[in-house]
Amino acid sequence: MSALKKTALTVLTAALLPVLTAAPVLADEAAPDRSEDKQPKPPAAMSTVGGTMLGKPGTQVNLAPGVPVLPKKVTGKSWIVADAESGEVLASHNAHWRLPPASTLKMLFADTVLPVLPKTQSHKVTSADLAGVGEGSSLVGVKEESTYTVHDLWMGVFLRSGNDAVHVLSEMNGGVAKTVADMNKHAAELKALDTNVVSPDGYDEKGQVSSAYDLTLIARSGLQKKDFREYSSTVRVQFPGEEKKPKKGKKAPKRETFEIQNTNRLLTGDAGLDPYKGIAGVKNGNTTNAGSTFTGVAERDGRVLLVTVMSPSQEESLAVYQETGRLLDWGFAAAGKVKPVGELVKPGSTDGDSDKEAVGQKDSGGGKDEAGGSAGTDQAGLGDKAAGSSGKGIAVAITGGALLLLAAAVFLVNRKWPLPDLVKRLPGR
Image (cartoon, rainbow, N blue to C red; front, side):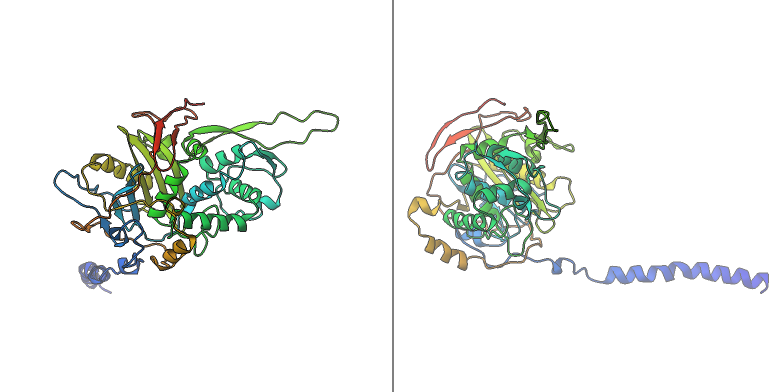
């Protein structure tokens, strides 16, 4: 080939190359993006426990002059902001969407089993106690042939979300199957009718679901228990290590301990996230199916709010905590100004509701939904009539303005259903 032809071919190739390489890009850009269409969405009709607005998909809030707009950067598939004392739901988003709860389900486990087992009771762990712990579970480090008190195990449940501790406590309660049955019965009593328990630790299981509304109900119930409040608000504590057998002719070596720290990042701070001022618990969770979930309670100027966020986008680091903090900020700014969109109902045991009625309501509310998906954050339901708030609940809190980065700080409030007593704070220990 002559030099002239080579030059001409090179020039022609150079001229055509941009066109050839651009063709696939143009085709891709022209194709419509259907990724959102594949994402599961909340059902058109969900449970209306707590008010009709709470059964609607999308964001429910009664905006009016003087009411701050909701924060824009909230991506949770489901969330709720509620007053812990009055029970008023200030705003919500897909409140009754039944989604995998992850370890936030441990709140129901604790609320169910805590009253049954004395905290001073000891138990020597067997291999059978730990046989059902799921692969990849979060663990506190419970060891076979070692003895733990119930108090130790609860610290492992709340601080490290230890599924090993959950299974040992379940066996002490009569077994996993009995504990699951107890939890489902207690959920029905609380009117947490979106909740179905399959595993007591929140491990991903088919059919295991709850909702932001239910988790908030459960937290509100649990926080009336002194030990529940103590465990959920403890920052760090020493946990017993493995018991080692003594060598022949010698005394048993002293049992060592190791420090465990709460995985609730609004309580402890982490990766650039500051502790939330006034936070007093409750529980976080994370699994493959559920994504991140969190229920938190915080106090400011004598007002106590509960916020639950389920499965936010993971584009932001520690998104579930960031979004909870934004919703708490909004709630404190809006409280007393915004008309509620519903209420946290009282347990059936306080108003004479029968288990039969609760079960019937559970069967009719919301249906069984596939987990996952996302929904828009448009503020729907504006101007709709909110359900009235009739019952007084607990106010679980700490004294105003308290900071929580004290080692093993414990914030307690003595509250009884339905009227609150005085707020108390115990010093860190």
